[in-house]
Length: 367
Ligand SMILES: C[S@@+](CC[C@H](N)C(=O)[O-])C[C@H]1O[C@@H](n2cnc3c(N)ncnc32)[C@H](O)[C@@H]1O
Image (cartoon, rainbow, N blue to C red; front, side):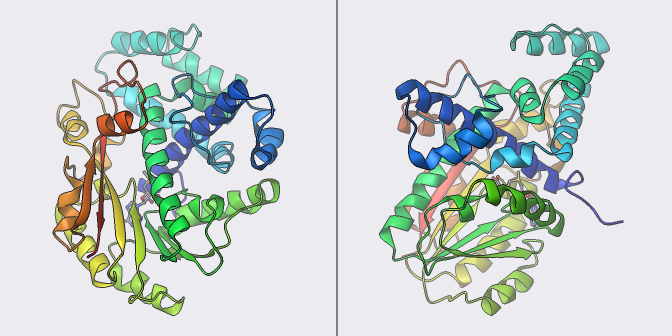
């Protein structure tokens, strides 16, 4: 049987897109607070999405609100609601007694101004009364929305620096999921973006984006190649890159966001080594890991539930170690969520909980 986006690790991409959709609506909401007149580039999104479905996250401020106009379209699919509600239920079912589960449901929904006493009641409400994005805005944990918004804004900033610099024209996103930087970032003519992920992720992505780009025109001028492959089958995707113009003598920007926690330490080391072999001087890499705290909560899962715990295979508080070992040794940075909050002057203390996972980002350059 052919797998689809609701099965396996591919489904995690939809959950992350949900966080970006909420951060994007929050971005518009914050812009409207600052000025009644929106920038012209935001009008298609405002007219076609926000005006109809202004559901955002109250915990996001203008400091970390970020704009991904396509994330919404992944959320308004029947697959996304199914994935989100199944995942939430799986998360709640980790709590040992029905009484405790219902108590938590009551608490979580009351924070959104809704009164439900059981999982069944709340699920029925979401399916029958809410649109998909509204369901995301109700069910999604605030802390997770912030985590996604923080990493999104940092990586967007990193890409923008490279785009402005123009000496780099090759960009590779491994485990790309529903990342839409290849469409929404102002890549110059002559640039190329390669994305690698499983076939079922790209099938869903293309089905949604084919419609979405008619509503929100892409601003990128880059060529885009989507390569359906397991990232661990390095020969396969590297040879496909070669056939589509990848030049290993030119610098490349590599992004591994939300990917390596699904690989073992040995697999990550092998992957980074292969990346390094085809990275010219001046290449850079951004790698996001699950911090040890999140991983520990997997181990102590009966006490502190962690969604997606069965798929996690590794964690690291020092992702820079993965990349420095394989030659990305210049300007190394290791950024925790606290570091990101400081960088963006964002007050996070009230928002993070231990119920989901912390993340750490490593950045490095090839000398
Ligand atoms: C949590 S999502 C993150 C997606 C995207 N990078 C983001 O941050 O929004 C993880 C993605 O990694 C992909 N993935 C996980 N293991 C993979 C592997 N071995 N080969 C290819 N893709 C993989 C999944 O299919 C999924 O799309």
